[in-house]
Amino acid sequence: MKYQPGGSLIPLTPFHFSPGLLTKACGPRSFWLTSFMAANVLIDVEVLYYMSRNELPLHRSLHTYLGGSAAGLVAGLLMWGLILFLARLMPPTSRWKQRLARTSQTRLLLQSLIAGLIGGVSHVFLDSLMHADMHPFWPITTGNALAGSISVASLHLGLGLLGLFSIFLWLFLRDPRS
Ligand SMILES: [Zn+2]
Image: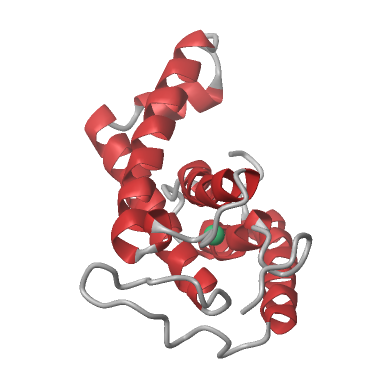
């Protein structure tokens, strides 16, 4: 696969948010969408870094299930720390702060780590459908048999529609008191 600046290989991270939006809309309320999104952004920093240096391949260790999972856990840990820090700055009357206070910090950490992990693994899976320069199962095996199994346009269209649908679903299903 040729690399074309501005082409399909640039990281379109927001498309990766769609499965997270759907999970937030239909899944457990405790799903940390922020950690899911942070994991996706963190993994694509790798691509931006190698693009800025004009070095190929663009998808390296973080675009493997091993590296993506590790990045997801790091993102989950960072978001957990950030959210707890921000909660400290909120007034005691904040409903958001009160809701966080009802759950133990360990449980919050676990929730954030799980969301980050899901973000990391789903990122690697979705990217592996597009990018031939990935080795998702490294270090067990190299190569990427899934690359090209769906066209990039179809994948982006599908994820874009899924994202829009999930946002509407979320707005429709959410409890207005929350
Ligand atoms: Zn990526």
